[in-house]
Amino acid sequence: MSVAAPAGARSGFPPPVLRHRNFALFFFGLLFSNTGTWMAQTAQAWLVYDLTGSKLLLGAVMGVFGIPMILLPFVGGVIADRIDRRRILWITQSVAAFLALLLAVLVATGVVAVWHIMVITFLSAVTLAFDQPARQALLPDIVPRDELRPAVALNSTVYTGGAFLGPAIAGVAVAQFGMPLGGVFFINAATFAAVIVALALMKLPPHDPSRSRGSVTNTAAEGLRFIARNELILMIMLFSIVVSFFGRSFQALTPVFADDILQVGLQGLGWMNSAPGAGSIVGAVVIGMGVRLPRNGSLALGSAAIFSVLLMAFAVSTNFPISIVLLFLLGLFSTALMASSRTILQLSVPRELMGRVMSFNTIAVIGFGPLGGFLLGPLAEGIGAPGAIFITALVVIVVVALLATLRPTLRRAD
Image (cartoon, rainbow, N blue to C red):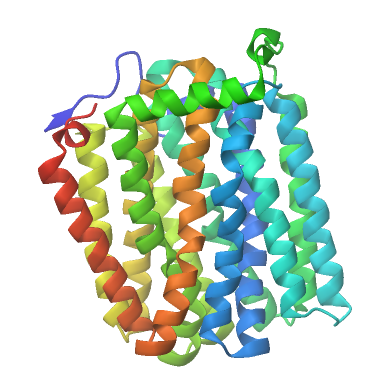
């Protein structure tokens, strides 16, 4: 079933939601910053595999990132519903910049070890656990309600969309122009300034102190009760956990495919990590243009099913161009399922509970994805990277089929 764009929303290119000044500042600041982040992530994955040659440690580094993202985002959501969200983001972005600079210095001086990378990765995840709920909860404050789906779609690309340029730039800069790996990490540290400046330029209403009333315990319990009593919210969380843990964790093993299977080196790894970002941008632009699409629940489930089939095809591919096309399509459908599921949440949750509920979405999407590395790494050591990814993709498609069949509440969600 197709539905028209939301009432009041306009369609076209560029996406009309970018006409809102606050949203445009936020979007472009984060996109610039996350291009640097993806440059660093590509260089870091290559560095870990180069230092150790271990699939297990590749998965472990990714998994270390997931631990704080499971434990802390709900605390971040409680804080986001009590404190000025812009102030929270100023603090988290500044801390993230410091950690990026620390890693750059360690790499540039040649003293970096895997345990350094793991500690900084862990602390970066702690920072993100407070950053993400505030970032997502801010969105309804800077765009009208009837433009939330295109805004959510575009906002979802600030991370994966940065992957379009970041990995390719890192691969070309190091492999073709001889930039030291430390230079990539220094660039990442500098790009955090874009978000800090964008936040300073945004014109927002003053913080409502009424959100700070009540104890932290009661505030947290209120959010948990709301989620527990709402079947649709629970289904979205379960769906997001399964897709993230078993589906998105494949990125932990892309250095293995680049080095051992496709044999394309660091530059090829850059293109492999860029391809999903390019697909994410295309998907976000299509949704942001306000074109006719299925209702949000059907779009989420259908996109997840297609994502799983594409992932299985990528697992068995030994051809570099075909793998790039498959990764591009994975990024496109990942954005579609993320935008539709987050839009359901944005439209179903009262504003005063937004930070707490969206913090659970942060746990489901950003926490369980990296945590899947703890499963994927040992599985790849035992049966190989292609077999590990094929099996986890198969799990996703089975769960999606069960949810679509047994839980029509999610399938019918607008």
